[in-house]
Length: 134
Image 1 (tube, rainbow, N blue to C red):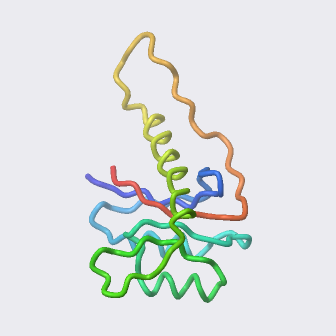
Image 2 (image 1 turned 60 degrees about the horizontal axis):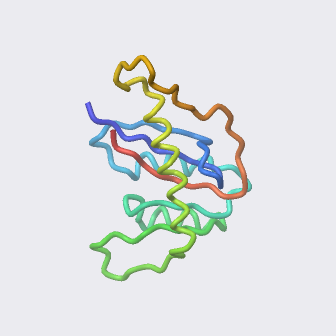
């Protein structure tokens, strides 16, 4: 069964909150759960095109949170976003890669290094939302 992992991360790409949904569930449902309870100090939210919706953008704007979300390709009027800030999403993608390393699905090798899994979570000023399909 496919599933999607949605995450809120701190400014260094460390997960603060995770939400797992079924693979066929809309990205918006996972986003709404995570956006409902962002840390108070959140200043910006980075998200991929899966989170490009007027409702999400409006919700963030009402809370004085900058939305840095890449517009969907089929959006008629492309909304601006800070490309330099958006590039920080690689921190979130790295976090997902580390989580996958920790899932225990590595081949059985006698000399395989032990993966390092994130152990501590401490929120900072900026948060991000990302998804990962497994």
